[in-house]
Image (cartoon, rainbow, N blue to C red):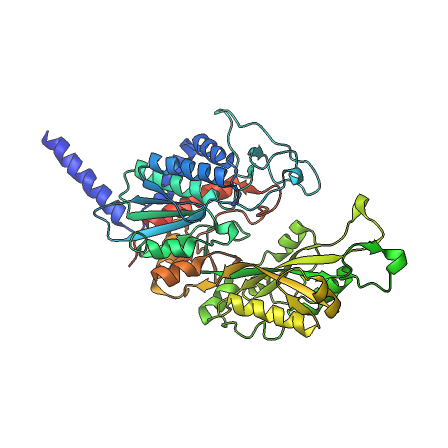
Length: 513
C-alpha cells in the first residue's frame, strides 16, 4: 500500500511538473491522439461540411449553429446559441477554477455564395476526398472513397467542399486540439470560443453583440482563426489584417439596348465609358492614381520590416501555380504589396458575350470594387476618395438609378452604391511582450521559428474586438494557401489540418508571462 502511495505521489509530481513547464511536449501527445482518431475527425468534419453555410441562407445557418453547439458540448464546453438581429453567434466556455488566464478563439462558420455548376464533378456541400490538388482545367485527380481502417490517410489528400478551408477548418482543428489535451489529462486555462455567422456578409451585427456582452467576452488575448498559412506550410502567426469596404459603380448610355450599326459612333457606350473610368483609377503597373489614396498609410515598424525580410519568397511557385508570368505591380515582394491599400475590380457586367453576344450598344455597365485597407485608412474616407475621383472625371454621381430628367440633363452619370460599411485594419505590435511570448511558445513547440506576418492580406473584423473589448489580438491561420477560398472547388489539404491541430494545442498550452 505504501509503495503504491509513493508511486502515485511521484507520478503526480511528474505530471504536475510536466504540465506546468512551457516546454511541455504537447506536439507528441496531440499527434498520437490525432493519428489514432483520424477517421473520426474527418468524418465529423465532413458532416459539418455537408450543411450549406451561405450567410444569407438563414435556415441552414441555424443548422450549422446547432451542429457546432453539439460538437462543442461533446468536448465538455458549456455552449449556447446567442441570437443577434442577423445570424446567431455560437459561444462556448471551458472553465478551470485553477487557471489564471483566459484565451478566446474566434472563428466564423458562414461562407460566401456558391455556384454549384462551376464545381468540378462534385457539389459544394457534398464533401469529397481527392488524392491531391485538382489540376486546373482538368478533372484529375478524381474523387476517391473514404478509406477503410487498413489504409493510411495521406497528408497530401484534400477535402473539397465549400467552407472546408474558409472557415470551418479551424472549428474541427480547435475542438480536436482541446479534446486531445483533455484526453491526456492536461490542465487547461480558461477558454472561450466565439463562432460568428455573418463574417462573409461584413459582420453587420458583430459590433452591437460585442458591446452588449463585454463582461461575458473578457479575456487576456483573442486568437483569430482564419486565413491561409504561409506558402511554405509552416506554422504561421499574423499580427493584423487589412480592412475592407466595397462599392458598386454603374454608368449609363441609352435607356435601352440599341443597334450598334445604326447608332455606333454616336450613342454613348457605357461599357467603353466604364472601362475608361476604371483605367483612370490605376496606372499600367497597378498603382492607384486616385488623389490621396496612400496618404493615410501608417509606415511599417522596424520589427515589421525585419519580419518581412526574414520570410523566404515563394513568388515563383505562386506565379506558376496561378498561371501568370509577372505581377502587375512593381513592389519588392508580394508580402510588401499587401501592406498597402488596394483597389480591386471584382467583376464587370454589361451586355452579352459568348453564344449570347449580339450587335448592340448596352444601356448600362456595372463594376463591383473592393477596397482593401491598411492601418491608418478609414472606410468612409477611402470610399469618398473614389467617389471624388469619379466626379473629377466629369460624372454626375447619384445613389439611385437616374430618371429621365437626370438623363437628359447630364452627359455622364454614375450610380455609386456603397454596398457595405466595412471595417478598418488592425495590428498588434509584433515586438510586444504578448506577441514575443506567443512566438516563443510556438517556436519551442516546432523547433523552428514560425512564419510571422505583420498583416494578413485578407480582411477580418479584428478592430471591433480591440475597440470594444480593449484586448490584444493575434491570428493563427491553418489552411493551405491554394485552397480556392471564395471560389469553386474550395479545398483543404489534410496535412495542413493536422499541423493546425498541433499549432492550436501549442498555443493553448503556452503560459503568458
